[in-house]
Figure: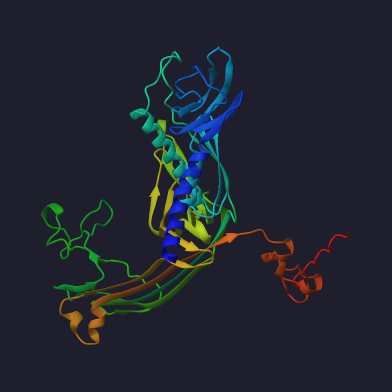
Length: 508
């Protein structure tokens, strides 16, 4: 029995709910009544008296149909306003209805509430446009609400183009099928600014070992001239003044015609030996033998460390850029043979575009680069007609571009590099360079090894203003030395500046 009562109660509730909704669609008309009808929806109007004749101002806005003697069916066809006049059998005015056809804002608001629960979005209909206001929690939810509203307008325009109702010609022109626009007056609550902290850490290690042996030897026994060289040599013809005459190897040139006797001896000219950093050298000279030995041997170790922590703040959705470094000029050819100057940036460069999402999430579009000037691969230019020389240095650059999504205060590595390279080369005299110990004088060898480690970390934070008393500047810890401390103590810094006292609260 109890189960039957429960079932009857549920059926009664389900039947009463539509009846109540239907009752809300009925309008009680008086002599002058103003009401609105959602587009493509209908309303029932109860008239105060029996009606014989009906007249509508603009049939393109709404359709009307008499239901018996005291009922009127009204259907919204297009956005706008019109009026309906009703007379009785004796041509007396029974009622004047002012009808406004608007967007179906109730249905649209239910859709937005379903998609974005808990968001405060208000809707108004202004001519053919929809005005949206209120405060939402994030930019992403604002975009979602706008997309839902734009989709409603597109659907309404599509429905009107397909059928819907046959447009009357009483308006004297073609129906305006423009769907309208969404006017956004919504605001985003919470923080609107993002502060990005970037840490760039790089370590370069380099080791170089070099052993370069250079020697040359020459022996002249009177009949034979022999020698050897490691390091290069040339053999230009021996020409002597006056007249660049060749001197005979033997004979005095007193033969008939005064021509030299015997072959012409080529001069031996070894390349100039050098020592780049450290080394040994030696020379031996006798009556018929000369030898020079230069041993260039050195070992270098290098360590370079780069640590940069740029911090940049900007509004959500706005671009921000930071550069700590400089610019160098580059000559650029222009019209009429002129030379212009352009500047190329180098150093630590940061640019990013933040977008605050829901629940403190931040979307970041990042571009981070670390560059420095390098003498290797530089270009030297000499403009025509001048003696000036432009030297354009090259750049070594590490760049990372990425798009990430983080919560407030989270850190992520957007780039990491572990680079290791090694080069080794040996040049030796065939055979002699393989002799133990002594073979080092007949060969040159070099070894170079480099290691690079790079890490780029980013941390976005929702930025909020701080009190002036909480601000700490780098100059706060630096004070000017007194005359006694500067001249007698040789100090270039004084005691740190005292912290300013907090301001007293205003008196009431």
